[in-house]
Image 1: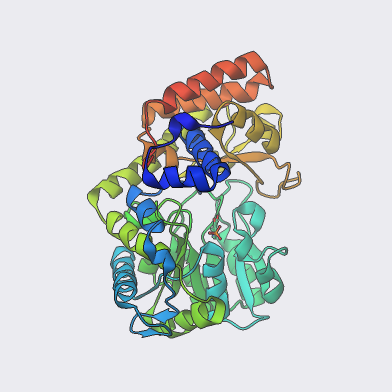
Image 2 (image 1 turned 135 degrees about the horizontal axis):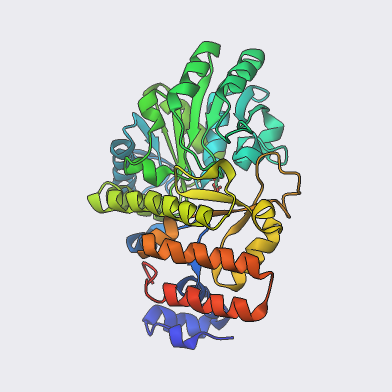
Length: 426
Ligand SMILES: Cc1ncc(COP(=O)(O)O)c(C=O)c1O
């Protein structure tokens, strides 16, 4: 199928139509998908239009191994300028002593921290994967899980909150070199001082991987772990921050040398300077009042969506949300696993992802829940009224049990919503 009605008549696109129509067709197909559907995966967002411009810029042509003023190649006037701007803006935005803007994405960002500040075999205390941790927090299938000795803390089954008493006990027993917090599917906020207290007691470094909520921290609508004295904070730049795909490491000055050497030459080669340019612009845009208003709406929409689902008898892990995401227990709520729920929602134009829940009895490819977030819908302009309709469409879809006529009707309702809110940058 071609999407010729969407082919913008620009020289770039006309050239691509001749040189590679297959790829142009996929590009316009993806654009149509993003326009018509509703993106509810909490880690996804629409990059600022300026970000798309800079990612496709001539900065992609340039090698810049090293750091500003200390590079292995010539011709660095402008790459030095953008990296210096990116570092200074990131430090100001997050109240950090030092920033490294070169990690190619979130996973190498976390790897660079472990490898820069610890030795292979060291013990790291991090959240259990099924309770909300990320693969890079030591999943056995990840290389980090093989290189370091990860020990675990979990959430309290009675209320879903982090179990700090158990965490402190594991820390005293295992004496970790580092305590990691920050999650992929934990819908609650927490006090970073609680981690810091335990870390200080056992002599551990503190690292917060705020990849999901980096934008909400930048906007000062959620707590900043650096304010609690954390050693390191990492965040991806492409989720709630609306920047390019990439990673950002912020740390105390005392760790700056080790972190920089770990990113380059320790782990990576040449930084992607088109990504660094786009990150620099992102940090500027995220400091504006409009971004704070956006971040508040992300939180307000998530609360509204959680409330509207709960009112329809849907069971949420931890009973609600303090951030941008919520996890629906689809087995308890609808008697279907998360894979089936995700597929049904795909058919009505809502993109979500299947999600393991704490101590999930089901396997990861067929887990007990789905994860839903509001950053992308909010970037489109969705507000509280739309959240109620989204909750209605989700609930009716998952009750419909695959009934084709009902799903066709629900798809029309999704498209009625999305047609009113253009995708930023498209
Ligand atoms: C908490 C957390 N850390 C790290 C990452 C890894 O980021 P990337 O996919 O860019 O490697 C993710 C990605 O979802 C994440 O949620």
